[in-house]
Length: 483
Image (cartoon, rainbow, N blue to C red; front, side, top):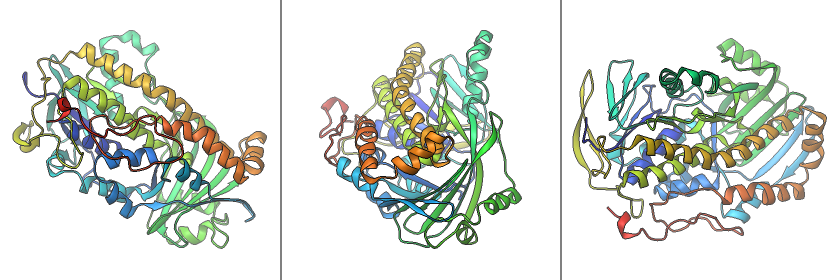
């Protein structure tokens, strides 16, 4: 309705969607999260590893201590041949601690999502709705209307698509763009924009070893990863496909059993094989490993994408969700400046005074809590300016994403000995501890230094290492940023 506060409709309540909810809440921008599943944290995935840049952002949100309670530090990186020979054993994560003041933390994916949801401020949690599968997006003169397959609808200013690799938001954005100008068909991203050359099966199980292990078992066109966290451990079984495809690949329970059977005798530690840990599984699944970066991240100032909806990496290097966090940071910093929202001082409390308003859908009326009214409203939004903002966001992120995509591509192929050069690099060069130290210091560290942070939340710096962050945390919030 004209004159309503600027409102973001987040499609997808997974890791990137919840991260966006935190950022928008602290920015004082009204939002709603629509998650298609009925359970906030279904146990469907495996692990997620958060690097120091992501941990800094969650520190700004005031929840780092809560996450540290369930996350496990990684210490040792080892590599095996398929016959069990150890050809690498290093403490490469110590280099990250030296350089940045923190190493990575490993989480069970469902546990991380549950913790992120549980620690949302109550006013933000009240805006998170499950069982809301996207059915369509329509543009209006004053914004957008999102309809769900249960018949409900939500009006807002912008749709933020955080709904993953098979994004329905991305599909709807494409439909809107081509309806506006059919000639875009030749240049717009395809319905399935990513290419797939590898597939992966994963499983989680009670941790059978010491925590903090990150092991690889390497072979030709196949590899295994083993990670041990606090309570659970995980395996990832990678296989190269016979041919690269853009088609979606699905797996049945029988497929997963057969997949694990092909790796049954592969070692994951000195004493355990895949068969030993798979038999103790608590959850398992499989998926194609899409790779690529979309060219189109937004349309008309009304729809914008973050995370796997905009770019997809293989998981070997652990850069997927970490880049989703950086997307949210870059986008929400710009949105807050555009909207003129109220920033959060310490990040420990709500961004603004909470007041109760009523949101009406086509099937029901729900009461939610919205943040303090922001400067922009649905009747004053300049969508041309907003689209320009979205394009600036895409360009800012593209440089680092290109580098991270290249790293993910190379790591996946080195682990699977995709070529003679990949085999030499992985088996004989990067297996040396001092070479790994050089790689982390001169390749990984400069990228981490550039990581962005929320520019409207003040917090003391949680991590300090040899190399300084190029974007330090705010020590105080300027008066005009305080609600």
